[in-house]
Image (cartoon, rainbow, N blue to C red; front, side, top):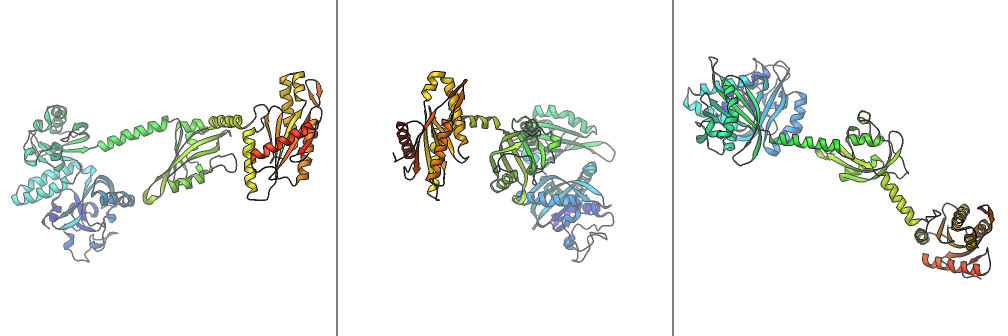
Length: 574
C-alpha cells in the first residue's frame, strides 16, 4: 500500500473508489476541500475501524465504508455522474476533464475538473480520481513544485513520490511537462513522450528548440518567454505528432514562481482538442445544412413538442419560428380524407421502426391545404427511449396535381371528363371480383347515339362536341354515384350498374336513359332530336369477364340499332 499511501503527498484532491463508487482511499486535500479543517485527515481510511465516521458531523456523518463518491457532489452533478461519467468509465476505463460540482466544506458548490482511470496499484483494484479546482490552478502549480522540492530531501521518497505523481499525470489526457529557465525539460508525462515518440531519458534534459524543432520553436518561443516573465499563457495550435497525424491543441504555459517571487520555470499542459474542433466543424456544417435546407425541418422532444424549426419551415407553413416552438406536432393542423395519416400514427411507427416516410395532408397558417412529403426519424436516447424526433417535409401539392392530371388524362375522356375504356374495364373487373365473395348483380348498358353524324354534318364538329357533353351530363343524372358512366369514343357510351335489384330495375334504368337522351336538346340556336340505341348485358349470364360482357352488350346494342331508333335490347334476346 505504499503507493496508495502517497495520496496524501499529492498537492491536489484525490481519492480511490471501487466499481460501485464506494470510497477506498481519500487524501487530506480532498478531506479539507469537502469537510473543512475539522475533517479527519487520514489518507488510508481503509485502516480505520468499521464504525469510524469519515466526517465529524453533518449530513455526511457515518461509517466510511458506507460513503460513495455520489455523496461528495451536488445533486445536478450526481445525476451527470451516474448517466454520463460512470457509463464512460465502464466502457473506456477513463474519463478526462469532466466538469463537476463538489459540495464544499461551507456547503457551497466547488467547480472541479475531474480525471479518472481504472487501475490496479499495489494489488488494489479501483478507480483513481483526481480533482482540480479551477480557481486554485496556480496554487496547485505551486504545490506541485513544492512537492517536488520536498521529495528531493529524501532520495527514496523522491523515487516513490515521483513514481506516483507520474501515475497521476500519466492518467491525464493531455501533455504535462516542466521547463526550467534555461528552457531545458525537467519533466514529461507519458502522453508527452508518446507525442514526440521519445523515451523519458531522451526527453528529460533536452532543450526546448531540439524537442520542438525549428518551426514549432519559433512559433511557441514568444509564449515560453512570456511564461518565464511571469505571464500565464493559453493558446491554440496545430501540430503534427510522431505518427504524422495533424492534431489541434490547446496549450497552457503556467509560470512556476519560487519562494523569492522569481520564475524558476513553467509548467506545460497541452490538450488534444481535435475531437472538439471536429465536432465544432460538424456542428457548424449541420447548422448550415439545417438553415439552408430546401425542405422544412422540425426537431421535437419525446412528447412531440417543437423545439426548433428551420427557415424553410417558416416559408412553407407560414408560422414564424417563435410561433412554432412549443406547439405540439400531434395537434398540428391537418386536413384531407378520414384516411389521412395523423402525426400520432407516424410517431408510433417511427418509434417501432426508427423512421417513417410517406405523405399526408396538412394546412398552412392561413388555412390553405397542401400535401406534405414527410419523413420522420426517431433519435433514441438511453435504454432505447426516444428523446427527439426529426421531421423533414416538403410541399408535394404541385406534384400531386400533376399526377392527378396525368391520371385524369390516362383514365378519363378528355372531352366529357367521363371514365374511359381503361377505367371502365378496371371498375367492371373489380365488381366481378366482388361477386365471387358476395351475392351481387352487375349490369352493363352499351349506348350509341342515333343521328349524331347528321348533327356533325349540319352544325359542325364543335356543336357535336357540345352535344356529347350534354348527353354525358344527362346520363350521369340518371344513375347513382355508385354507378359508372363512361365514354368509349365517338358517340358510344357505357353505363355500369353496381348491384341493381333485378332485371326489371335494369330495364327501367335503361328506358329512363333512352328517354333522357331522346328528349329535345337546345344547341346552337336549334332544337335537336337525337335518339339512343342501348344494348344490355348481365353478369354472369352474358359473360364472365369484362371483355365478354362488353362484347355481349355491344352486340345487343347493334341489334337494337337495327330494329330502329331509341330502342333497347338485352343480350341473347331479339
